[in-house]
Image (cartoon, rainbow, N blue to C red):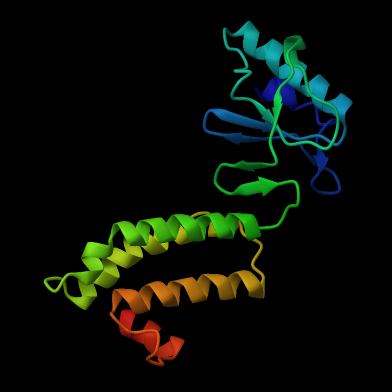
Length: 187
């Protein structure tokens, strides 16, 4: 696909001398451009190169995150989406808040699925913390390296982690415990 997107004149300005034309994800491709015309040219080019090697663009799976007219490879309009998620969420509004919110929801689901472990009398605190770190914490912080870290996001993540840890250690919400003491007990 490099030959179809590397012309360097239809991407978004990345540095003074370079443009970013696309993002490659395993077997997916995210094309980037400033204008509808540029995106149409780039999409047509990708479709042509794909076809020449026996591949095609799956129209039902291909979506457009846009602010302009529809994109139509081979005359068929691609659907629109308001956000795109792969390793992180890319949305029309930008920022990391939607991605953090999604990670918190997924971490809550994971935490809930492990409820029997947290209530178990046979598991030591050390084992529970290890289960927590390898499952819940990993789900929550997946892709965190790509987040724009604001104080709001840091606080949200700290609050949810502290809440989960208190439940894991059977510390009631009414009991006051500093975050430092909580982290000390679990490290």
